[in-house]
View 1 (cartoon, helix red, strand yellow):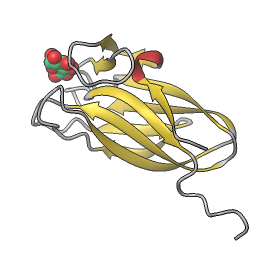
View 2: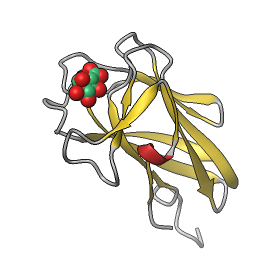
View 3: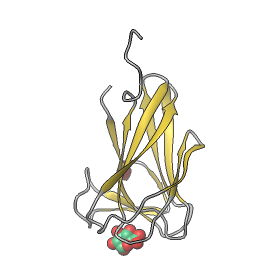
View 4: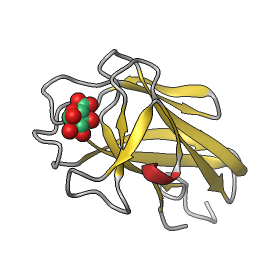
Length: 138
Ligand code: GCU
């Protein structure tokens, strides 16, 4: 199936705010994480079938300090302290990926800041549940 983009501004936000003051985002805006450890964005993600998936997070970090986050899938950390390094400006957006496994049906993906700086500004999550599957018939 084609990758599906889930906007951060449509997700569940804990300790963060939807803003639109830095250009280059998709959709209506992005989430500005509060500058605290534990702030998070959580998306509901549907998968047609169980199997591997690539999660791509689009973000901006206008500081020169990494803002690591734990990426959890269905409550289990899939990538601990994932790096969200500085992107040069709050209007410069970059992507980083996590390979994981989804179950059939409803899944959650949560990106939680692990330092007192909070997370980067997060634009969206794209889920590609087709990329790492073997071709049919093999
Ligand atoms: C600035 C910037 C915000 C960003 C914040 C931060 O205030 O405008 O978009 O989220 O810095 O450091 O987290």
